[in-house]
Length: 186
Image (cartoon, rainbow, N blue to C red):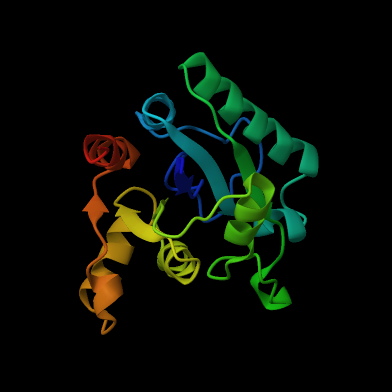
C-alpha cells in the first residue's frame, strides 16, 4: 500500500488570515512548506490537500483566484521536485452543514474514492481542531503543526478531555512534521 499524507492548506502550507486568502497576491507559502511537500513526495508519499474554503461560498474569493492559488501551489511543488496528487476543497459556509467541510470527513472520502485508497492510519497534518477531528473521524492519524492556528490549537489539546486528541503529535511546522514522517518510514 502506498503511503499517503493529507495536508490542510491555510496555516499549514501557506499563511492564514482571519480575512481569508482571497487572491494569488495574498497567497504566501510558509517558509519551508513547499520544500517539505517535495521531500514527502520524493520519499514516496502521495500528497493530497484537503481544505475548507468557505470564502468561496461567502463570495469573498472568486473561483478563478482559488484556481490560480492552487495552480501556483502545484507549480511551486513541481519546481521543487515534488507532486501533489490532488487538491480537494469545500466551498461551503459552516451554516450549510456540508459533510465535506471539516470537521466532516467528506474531503477525506473524496480523496479515498478518487485514488481508490484506504486512508486508515495515514497521517493528516493540520493547524486547527477541526482538521484533527476530521482526520481522526476519517481513520487517519492526525498531526498538529504550530503554524497558523496551531499554537492556539495546541493549548486546546492540552485541555482536552479526549485522550486521543490530547496525545496528537505536535510539530513546529510542516517541514518538521515531514522530516518526522520521512524518518519513520521503513
